[in-house]
Amino acid sequence: MLQLLRNTSLSFGLAVAFGMLCASWPEVAAAQNQTTETRLSTVVETKEGPVQGFISSGVTKFLGIPYAEPPVGNLRWRPPQDLAPWTNVRKATEFGPICALITTLGVFSGPPNNNEDCLYLNIFTPDLNPSARLPVIVWIHGGGNVDGETPGYDGSKLASQGKTVVVTMEYRLNLMGFLAHPALDNEGHLFGNYGILDQQAVLKWVERNIARFGGDKDNVTVGGQSAGAVDTGLHMVSPLAAGLFHRGICQSFCPAFTLPTKAAAEATGVAFAVAAGCGSGTGPDVAQCLRNLSAARVEELAGTASTQGKFITGRGFVDGQIIPDQPLTLFANGRFNRVPLMNGNTADETNFGLAIATYFSNTDNALRTPPTAERYLNYVNTTFVAPAYPDGTAAKVLSVYPLSNFKTPQLAWDQVGTDSGICNQRRLDKILAPQIPVYTYEFADRTAPFYFPDMPGIEALAYHTADIQYLFPLWRGGPLGIPRPLNRQQTMLSDQLVSAWANFARTGNPNGSGNSPWPRYTTSADAPAWLIQDLTGQDLQGLSTLTDAQYAARRHCDFWDSVTATQ
Image (cartoon, rainbow, N blue to C red; front, side):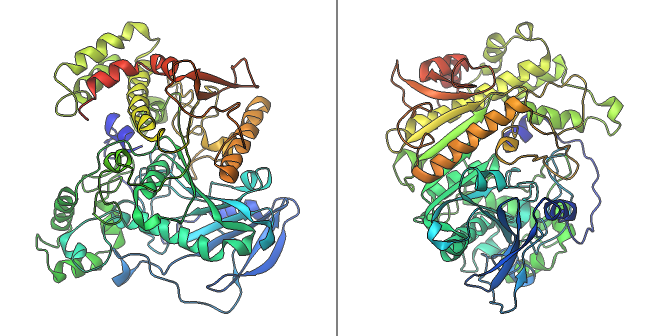
């Protein structure tokens, strides 16, 4: 998602008001409490204290369970701390507050807020009996690690239909969750990638407690979409996550790119401190100044509604301990937590970023304008340049993807951005496939409901984030998103995906066993390698397969491999 942010020129400088004291979605929790057969559940004794959720349509839900002490005051920019235990029954019937954010990515996230007390998790289970030992899916929401929240992710279908225990969580975002600075990094604790540490704290909580909710602590799948996928890959290369999970799911995409170094991240952090008025020093006084900043001031420097600010390291950085080296280096050298992996994408990844740019192109809905030919050419000529690409790459891109081949500039832009990202990801698949079971896929339902408001001239198609609602019904991004129910055919596709995701969580194979209908990824010339998930396939009610060579040709991967070999 961060690449989408960079490639769609989203800096429109929209002002955002701060000062919200609470950023939970009370209407979502209320709606959950109004569903049929809703009643309070039995009390579950966690290691930290007793919690009571509620039962709705056969699924028991526990919302807003704290998993660490609030990271406020002196705990800001420190690893998550163990909770003090409690003895009174804690009601777990409403989502906890979402984490501090400013960037909303259109209607994907929000509302903007300054809340730091946000380390809460949610559980959806079809069976509270500890003897059930159901597979566990720990889901990491997306949002570029700058925004996003859990209230829209209703895990009921994955729980009831998939017979899994689903866990979602809030984790620190943007500057609150990903900041390096020598004054903080030299304090003797794990540093920088605090949002990743939050997620690992959830995995440790699951290890301690999930059996009491019917889950199997020895069968945990970590998965997520966009930044959640990136973070899943970071847990795969983090030695601190070893043994805490047993499968991985990356929905657009695992990390196949270069992260900032510690030195680069700290330089950015020092620049942030200077901008915040804390000076350029690196001593304890600067650390204290940073912790004394108001949350509103931190978020002000984190960006705007439409884009991240210049002080965001974003996807994390190589700190040497949480993330010991570049992910691609660790994957290539076999220095990672070897678990079966599902790794896939949507057919039109880039349309999401283009929709955000269009959404913010004017605050008057009537004046929102889709991408033009001039903007497409500017995108190509400013993106595919040295040092990331060899000289002359932009001209080659325009020869492979001329505007004359597409109905609109938007569709040309979508194809270029999507193909380049997918082919980069395919290189990672080829690195991993000899080492672990890898199952690749493309979500290609170009009729997927779109939760943005209608924007004439924008064709969303199978956009980045389109697949979320097939696993979490009626997901709509943030509170301004428009929920749109799936039609009958889309519901059938949703059923298939839930089954595959649950099978994978159960066995490490989305089929349950065997290699049909979903083949294990291979580069063998005649063997199926990619599962295509759409509503136009001729086989298996919307599921079809391609060999790796067929899929690579479809995405012009020979071309992209030739111009990105040095990345």
